[in-house]
Image (cartoon, rainbow, N blue to C red):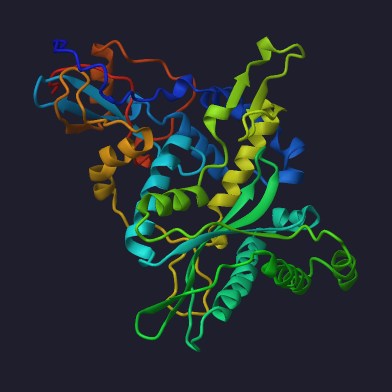
Amino acid sequence: MRMLNACRAPADNAVYKPRNPRHSHYYRCIEAHFEELEGAWEERYQRTCGFWRPLVMDVIYKYLDCGDLHFGFARVRCDTCGHEYLLAFSCKRRHFCPSCHQKRVVEFGEWLYGEVLKQVPHRQWVFSIPKRLRIYFMFDRRLLAKLSQCAWTVLSGYLKQGAAFDDAVPGAVIAVQTFGDFQNFNPHLHIIATDGCFYGNGGFAAGPRPNPSDLETAFRLEVLKMLKNEGKITGLIIENMLSWHHSGFNAYCGEAIWPSDQEGIERLAQYIIRVPIAQERMAYIPAAQTRDGVAKVVYTAKDGKTSRTFAALDWLAQLVRYYGYYSNKSRGLRKKSAAGDQMPALVESGISRTEFRKNWARLIQKVYHADPLLCPKCNGSMRIVSFIESPETIKKILLHLNLWETRNHDPPDFNAVKHIPEAIPELSCDDYS
């Protein structure tokens, strides 16, 4: 095998620089503490975060192997100069793996704009509830879907009032988020709703400019009634909460986004299913570097000024808990019904694994604002020429390239892990058979 030499790419080109997950603070924290977390879960976290599910370890193992050449890769070659690099497979773990989730977020935004939303104006709505009620949703996740129903009942009725047609029907996509800025439990709803209603045979009537404060009282009554019907609160609690000067319930409405603004719609769609944490706002400090000998995570708020420090194990426990809330199928993620009185919900993408592979370069380019198939040597076009999935061949190639490393945790079974390509640091190699 010979190493290839080629001309240098122009300095001003946006050449894709593949990530190295092992160097991130997020990866280092999880790798250092996931086994300790499993051992301490029952005693320290089960009461507040629920039971430890076997699925969690499987998700963690797959994340730790994401972007790892030892689990297979694709060969990417430049047709112009012959330069090559290896492209590691990824874990496809949504929510828990920030890199894989971000590509899914981009894909979801495109799909929602192109396949679901009609060419009419839309607005973002956000509904939130007071702290006193959040604990009920923490320990009974079925209530998250019912919370969506409460918001949809109120919002759909409000939008219909602005239409002068008896058959007026609004449309919406609803996402439940359970995390606040510092991973505090904060169940709230993000909604993309039509700015008006459909009527008749394909007609659409834009509504008057909404006033979100008009919905707060109705939303409060709907949620309190639902919690009473579910046996979570009593009439006395409702009477007490109705006497509050500030109810703690809130409704927010954004500006109208017109159908010609594809980027605006896609950004909004991406925002409502974003990952709970931002890696760039997280710093991991190993135990050896702290005064008390306890590993820490420092997380900075979106404002860039406020930050909080967590014990690494506590922070990881919160992350695992949020993964559980997102993976709960009872929350939603089902096909949107054509019936007007059904609650709209997030819809799973129907894109196949093969189609996703074809879209890989385009998604990476949108996520990282660089072209992964632009040759860094000659600025030519690169393409995937083969997939290497045999463990024996993988080891043989990596040993030859001096890239084989001894694993520091037991990997899952090769046959049990399904991958899609994920780039790793650039390498050059010839054909290997």
